[in-house]
Image (cartoon, rainbow, N blue to C red; front, side):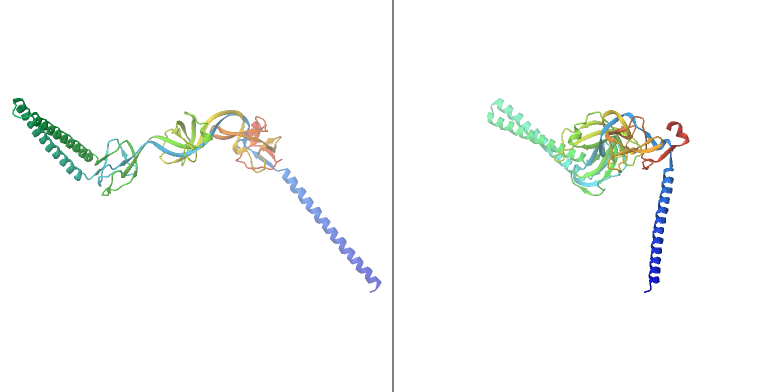
Length: 380
């Protein structure tokens, strides 16, 4: 190859290399300029806050308590059962019907028991006749003994016969009373006033003794049966107040501890507490309820639990300082309630410090903020 061709090739390669280096440097400079523009734009982003976007750290008296849950149960309820066997008749009440104490709910076919009562009464009458015969015989024998016509032994025999006849008569009377009681038991009556919650049999069925017919509940008094662990039960006291959220109800209701079971459940060692629930429309037996049972009160610096962020290794709040957001790590303490809102005791922030509420979400540390006109006076 000729010398000038070699030099031409070297010059061409050097030009290509210089062109590549120049393009790489130009691309890096363009990226740096774009990143700088984005950084400038991000630093200039300002978030406008309103009063509902902020909460204050305040010294508050928190109501501490135990979480409780359970089912509602009517204090007074009863299951009407058949007392005698037979065909069920005249069962007219259904679920939701109102009944009164002593109201006839159903009947069991009384034909057999009426016959038994008549039989028992006739046996009693027969026994009564035997008593009369034995008494007349005794009276006659006593006169004969006094006159010396018969021995004393015959009188003793007459006395024994009279005693046996009287005993048979009393037994027949008792049998008549049992038959009358069986006949009365064919009529099923409501033991209390309330509402029918279950209808467990149908007219025409043949029922056995103790067969369940209907269940009646009195919704005038409702209780919550709450199960607590052995450790939690040590904090239970009569009269403690709980705030409950009833399944399907938008408004909370109050309840008060009225009884504490003296025995723990075998195995789980749980203790059952009974809370009288304040009357409220719509309460039904069997509804699920949950809430907090107040056990103590604590004065401490606290903030709304929803304002505490947990997306970092340590919990923090979004503190507002000098018109900027600062992520401030906090130490959490006891949890409680204040005016129905969940609160938590915090350390690491000063009283009256303003933090962003949980409704707004997470903002980047250092984000600039400003206050809306309606809240600018409060924010300055």
